Length: 105
Image (tube, rainbow, N blue to C red; front, side, top):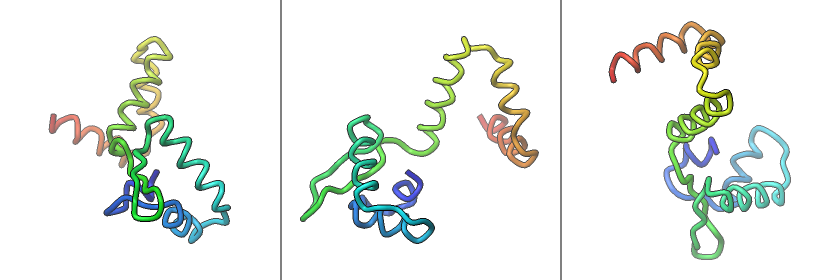
């Protein structure tokens, strides 16, 4: 997801594979299967390109994180203690960034 979020345009499997291969060894078929599964789950949009499918994230990184956090809090019954525990685990700089973001709201 990170390389798709960072991309300026939709990416093909080959482009995603090339990007991921700069930092780790990964099979082209693994990238293909993963992108197809993520598209079926609605995390990515699959577009028909010139010769190959292109993939683009269905939501922004912030939107996805917010949804995941909301789902996680729902699993624990909306207990604010779980959220406080999460915040306590953040690095001080991240807590301060969160505090500034909340103050801006």
